[in-house]
Length: 149
Image (cartoon, rainbow, N blue to C red; front, side, top):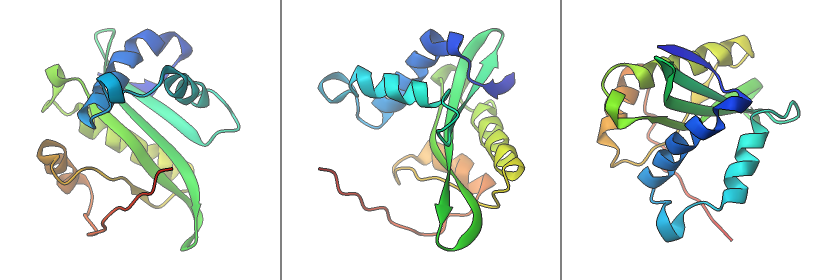
């Protein structure tokens, strides 16, 4: 398995993983993301002015996982903070270390960028994901609120 930055040629292989990730969070069918949002997200990965990045896990020429992360400022730190925005592995490879490898690669890239903190969020019902997250990071007990217009 290889963990690497996404490339322009990966779009058609990345898209099913992105769709699977969004379906996990209830964004499918009538609630699916609009294609212009997906296209904008994809373009941000290749825009030098955007602090957003995408990794993929490749196994035998097939993409089997993705991780999207970004850097931002914080009021409690001088250095940038890394936010692991999205993490998804194909069902066929779950439990084989793909998710862990993606997370650890994000950690390494965050360190290279001078970030001492990487964080993410998930639904409390994501027992499968949380079993991994509890092994690689500390749950700080935060509850997430959002307001959409």
